[in-house]
Image (cartoon, rainbow, N blue to C red):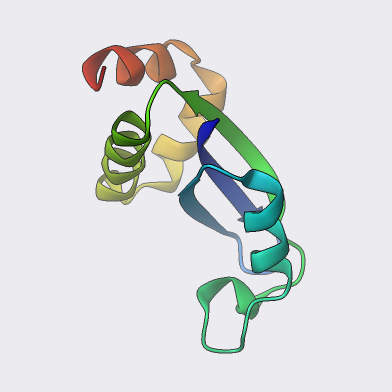
Amino acid sequence: MHLVYILHSFKLNRFYIGFTSDFDTRMEFHKNAESHKFTANAEDWVLFLKIECESKSQGLDIEKHIKKMKSKTYVENLIKYPNIILKLKEKYK
């Protein structure tokens, strides 16, 4: 299963956007991140949103799109307005 995932840290008040085909392994990586990795800056990362994708290329395109927006409001609106996710999936089919 291909996923775009968004983590949130209350301590940093920041989001982390990523892509994976193995979510459990990837979360372990973030929990045990080395000090030079971005997610090592906080220990309170929680899953904010998971977007299931049809393919690896779709997932990578959606991840890139969300990162390019550089907007906390945009990320929050993905939860508030689920039709945005549907439009992203259609755009990057």
